[in-house]
Structures are given as C-alpha cells and as structure tokens.
Length: 278
Image (cartoon, rainbow, N blue to C red; front, side, top):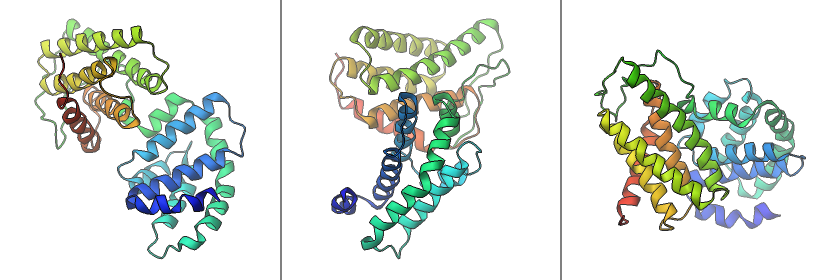
C-alpha cells in the first residue's frame, strides 16, 4: 500500500510533520471516493494547506469542533490526531486504522464540502481575515508583540484610507490563491506590486510604523517574485497571507493571538533581506 511505502519517509520527518501528513493524506485519500467539483477540490486543498501549516493542531481541533459547519469532520480528525499522537502507537497497525478512519470520515467530509464556500471556510479557519468594513472600527490593539501605539483618527479622510486598506487586504487574499495556482500573468503581478507599494506609502503617511513594516515585507516579497528572484512556494504564499492576517487583525481590533503569524512575517522578512533589490 502507498501509505506503507511512505512510512519510512514519514518517520524521517519531525513528529509534528508526521501528524500533519497523516491527517492530510487521510483527507486526500477519503476524497478519492467522492466525486468533487472544482470548487470542492479548491476547498479541500485550502483546508489541507491549513492543516499542513498549523502551529498547534490540538488547539485548532478544540476550536473547530465548536463550529457547527465543521464540527463533525473536526471531531473525526481530532480522533485521528489523538490516535497518531498516542505514545502506544504501533506502526504495524497504521494501515488498518487508516482504512477504518477513511471509511468513517467520508460522509462528514462530503457534508462539510457541501455546506461551505471558500469565504465561509476562511471565516472558520482564519478569523483574522473577517475583513468586512465597519464604521465603528477602533485601531487600538494590544498583543504580546505589537505596540499599542496606534493612533485612532476620526475624520472622513482617514475613514477613506481605512476602508481602502481593508478592501485591498480582501483583494490580495484572493490574489495569493491564484498566484500559487500560477493563474496570474506578469502584467497583473506587476500591477499588484505597484499597488502594494502605494498602500505602503499611504500607511507611512498615516504614521502607522508597525503596519508599514509589515506592508513593506509584503510588497518586497511580491517584487522578488515578479523579478523571478524568489520562487513561488507554499511557505512563501502562507507567509504573505500571514502579513494580511496581522494587518486585518489590527484594523478590526481582533482579540486573537497573533504570535504565530508574526513569527511567519518575521521569517519572511529575514528571507527577503537576504536578497538585494535593485
């Protein structure tokens, strides 16, 4: 069986990577028994990518089981995670349990994919990207990493700026998905780079230093991709998305732990600093 052949490769990875790979393959193998349309395939891809980049699967499942649209599927995945995390795990029995878990998860997977669209899935998985515009937004945020040194400006000009930033976050979130799927041409990519730099300048004009630095990391990374200096990888795309999540959370004053996303932004900044932008 393919799973057995991959066992040696699994064991050579870290423990956390092994667990992620097991869950992702469980979902992907279950999907082979279903007739999914293109939208459902995209949803499955997005969810698998979320699991692959999760910083804490145990905590994620504890939250997901509370959400009605995904609770049944999350519960089955939580049980699979507990099985694969057991210190008494017997590798000789993995194939048998994998088949059993596949049969148990098929109905819940299809039910979930029939209930949600991509926007709803993002709302479930990445609450920091709930970015609908609200007039009453307050830009003060208190986290362990970001200074609560952001000034709230109550004037029409500023409100226009705030709305524009939120709209652009929404555009770039969808843009990154298409960029990873290589469905972006060079003209659109060039325009995206130029627009990202304009947004950076606007943020600087409003003296939001933290957001300006994050936006600079975002725009510089896109520029390196445009110049074919930096390859388009899943890690790079998700690190770019982390920039958007942090900015969205600040704009919407979301009370969420941003430490994981800030860590990704910091790692991305270190990566692009190793290149020379001419």
